[in-house]
Image (cartoon, rainbow, N blue to C red; front, side, top):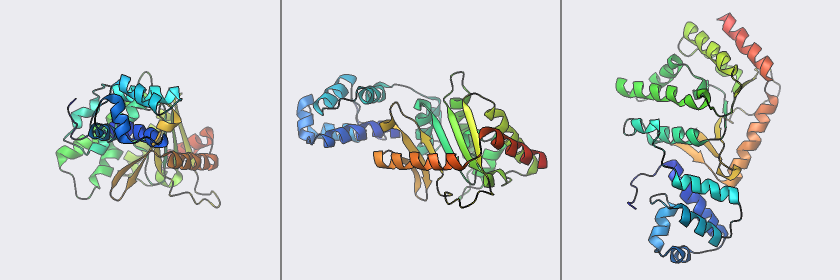
Length: 283
């Protein structure tokens, strides 16, 4: 199999999970290579995501590593054998690879949870709102790239609007519902759009109110994507140096706890809807 020059985040994740299983079993790369009739370099390529691996090899390695979690192994096999050529591939070479990796992650997610404090989460954004955000990017984007960014974000909404959508929950601080991105009229349309989406059975929107006493969780923004099993969940966060895809078991547990905390202090669905509706009326 030809070596990949630029593996996707999903391909890298498969390799990382196989490496974790090998290291947990205390097995050297050369021993794993011998099992497959390969050399150590090929094992390294598989574990870095630069080379593919067949279902038969994934199962052989998992058995050799004494991994008895059949659901996890099945999840890894699904990652190894997936040949999806998703709509996001149309943007390869036009947009940063992190945009494409996020789309692929969402496509395969079993559910999605967002926490945001200053902006409306991407899956809830209107086209006008998204465009204003991208227009504020420094350095400024050329018109063609700006259009591609906006179109890509709008197409990402398929995961919650398709005939078979994934469950989606967004916890949004009231601050994000006051920052009028795009002006009064456009932002009113944005609030109405949130209310429309929240009518769907698979979508839950909850608001953290301003008047909440003693809230110190404003640094908890995240995108949380559920995997085939909890060990294959992923957290996505923006950082000064770029987008981070987080997948260590300890960190995933940390972000699950954070989500439960912000969820617990947020308004229930009905009160959240009333709060958003009132803000829209005031614009």
